[in-house]
Image (tube, rainbow, N blue to C red; front, top):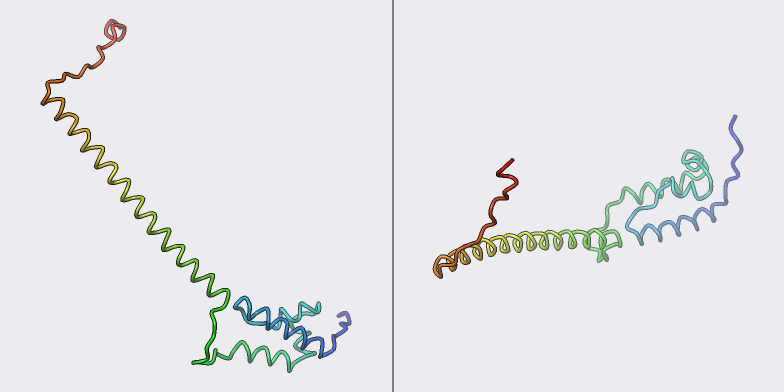
Length: 139
C-alpha cells in the first residue's frame, strides 16, 4: 500500500523551479526533475505524475543545446576548470624547473670535485687518508 502524498501547489513548484534554475545557472549545472521533486519530499515518479508539464519543461531545458552566437559568460564551473588547468600547467613547469636545477647542482658538484682534484695535483697537495685501525688488522 502506498502512502498519500500531499502535492504542493503548482505556483510553489514553479517558484522552486525558478530558484533551481538560478542556482543551476550559478554553478554551471542544469536543473533536474529529481532535484525539484526532492525539494518537496516526493519521489521522481510521483512528481512526474502530479506535474507532467513541469517535468516536460525541465526535460526540454536539459535537451536543448545552448544557443550558438549568444554571448555567454563562463560559468563558475568553467572558471574552476580553467583555473585548475592553469594550476596544473604551472605545477608542471615548476616541477621541470626543479628537476633542471637539481641536474645543474649535480653537474656543478662533479665539476667542483674534478677542479679540486686538478688543483691538488697541480700544487702537489697530498691527501691524508686515515690509517687502517690496528684492531681490524689484528683481528
